[in-house]
Every structure is written in C-alpha cells, then in structure tokens.
Amino acid sequence: MPYTYEYPRPALTVDCVIFGLEESSKLKVLLIQRAHDPFMGQWALPGGFVDMEEGLEEAALRELEEETGVRDVFIEQLYTFGDTERDPRGRVVSVAYFALVNLEKHPVNADSDAKRVEWFQIDQLPRLAFDHEKILQVAIARLRAKVRYQPIGFELLPEQFTLSQLQKLYETILGVEELNKRNFRTRILKMGVLREMGKQEGVAHRPAMLYSFDKEKYEQLARDKYEDLIRRGVDFEI
Figure 1 (cartoon, helix red, strand yellow):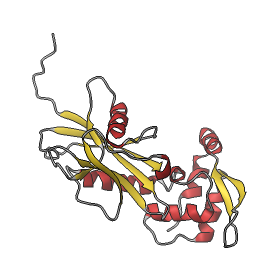
Figure 2 (cartoon, helix red, strand yellow):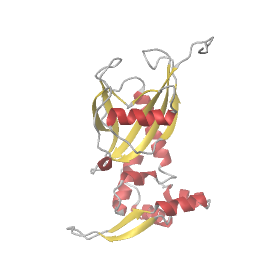
Figure 3 (spheres, one colour):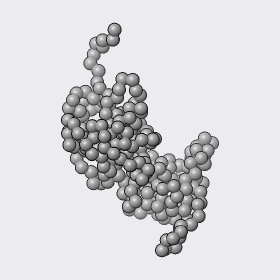
Figure 4 (cartoon, one colour):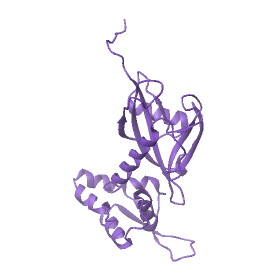
C-alpha cells in the first residue's frame, strides 16, 4: 500500500546548460525549441522531469540525450532553482547541471519533446522559457569563476592547440577583449600541464608550437595537493 503524505509535494525536474566553442571562438549554449505546452515553440534549456527510480544526474543525462542526441559528457551540478512561480504547471523545483563540450565531437539531433535543437551564441539568445534565462546567467557566472582556478576550458579545444588559441578561449569565456599575452603564457606554462606536440605544418604564417593538455599530470598535481600551484597558473590578472 503506497504511503500517503499529509502535505503536497513539489515536482522535481533537471535542466542542462551545455556550453560549446565554435571555430570562430564564439561561446555557445545548446537550446531546444519546445514541441509542447507550456511555452510551446519557445526556446529552452534541455531538461525534464525526474523519474521515481532514477538519480538526479542520471535524469539530466537521459533528458539531454533524449532531447538533443548529446551523450557521454561530464556534467556538474550547478544550482537548485525553486521560485514558486517558475513553472505554470505547478510547484516545480529544478536542479540544474552544466557542462563544456567540443561541438565537433557532439553532433545534435532533436528528439523527444524537442521540436528543434540549435547552438546559440550567449550574446545572441532568443527569449527563453520558464526561468531559463536566470539559470543560464548563473551558469555563465560559474563558468567564468571556475575557469580561473581549474583548467576546464581544455574540453572546448581540439586535442592539439596553440597558446594563441588557448588565450582566445579564456578571453571568450571571461568576456574580455585581450589578456596580457606574456603574463598569460608565463602563467599557463608554469602549471606544467601542457605537452609540446611539435610545430604547425602547412601554414602561411610562422608556425607556432602545438600543445596538448596533460590530464594525467594535472590529476597527479591535484592528488599531490598542489592546488596553490595550479591556482596561480590560471588565476589571471585582467
């Protein structure tokens, strides 16, 4: 016999803020166009209701794959949103997650209750359903804070990249026009988590050194409690 609660219970949903970087170094976010009410036809973050038998992260990954086709990504819990008027269907609390992905590695395909799915530049967004504009702004603030002390930005780059590409990535995420080039390169190389991969080939200009992110070295530094060294490596003066 199911248990009967004395008080009404709110519904629980998950929402996913998925950031990606295109070749032009524009930071983008993945949105779906809703196929059903409420807000039918409006753009929104991928997400949906949590099933009774699944965990929160499991639900977020399921909804993300069902609505966009994106799978096999590492997501991190962002924040819980529970304003009483955030959903016209009733009392709904949403736990938001965010992730950074390489657009080339994650093609998208609308499915489930998504009419369309597209990447939008974060400075050229359509009107969003529910309180998803608020969720997105919180995610952008978290991304810009976290990129200063943890090398999460490498997820957005190709496997081999130049220091100029890396600097452009940080400038894009931080929303600044230009970081000090010498300061950036000194700090990033001091971390000791980049591997030299040889110089560019077949380019019209002077070939630059290519690098790759040494994830094992970074994880070893973290295990050895060199957080201060890592933090000094990416906490740039801007």
